[in-house]
Image (cartoon, rainbow, N blue to C red):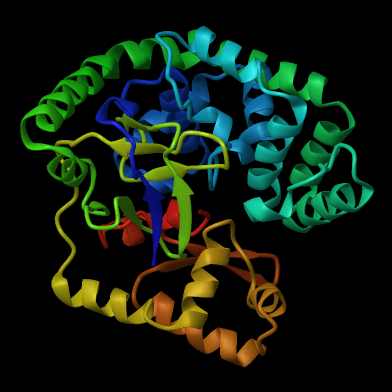
Length: 360
């Protein structure tokens, strides 16, 4: 399964490698939201969260659906700018329909096709469906979606102020620290593209990204088949804090954006091949792939998973046992219920960013 991006007739100069302050801030916010996905930065996340002012911490929690499991499109700029302020200015230029739809996709855990024409802002049926999906994910998501639909301008201004306040709180210092590594990676990619061509450059981005020269496609390993066009160009954004995720956003009429991790030092030891094979076998069943897709968006009980996919509870339990034996799931208790969660560090070791891929 893969995402195929059509590059037919796209000149090389439209394939852009660039640094993005907003994309890196979003990667940092993702680490703060789910530090267990990023063992290298767990210490950083703990220290940063402890130093946050209570008001900013509450506002981050309020909007974390924009970057927790997947990323709202507008947080990964197709044409990155030099400063965070410039990139936020570009986000402000989006119309409300585009902004709200992108935000609701991440908040509601919805497929991009579910919010088409006209819009949850103007169509009662779309609005009801969006609020129902958000409610199913939890009261915080429901509250955010309700306020976003009722008063998008207010919510957009509040989100911008929150992102700006991250600057003095933690972003400015950390961006200054990682910027040289990102710049070095960009120089390498530019040189590689000029000397060896697109195929080798894509391989250096990630083993999950390849060039199908015959079909004129960039192919990215994902857990579901999809297609996009790079007719307006395509952007590759390196990240330090985003390791190990390979994040892809794409929408009709917009440049696809790939945020890829720069090569990092001191990574964990390779996973034994026996365990890798066990995990691959666990993911070879279509039902288990469906369960992984759902769990990538958040924790669920056995009953919730059975209801979501119209399966029996015993059947779901058997498949969860296989995934858990392969080390792909973790569990925690919520009262008398057991919640299952996807272990992102385990899935990342397979060489494909399952945590983000299942949402695209």
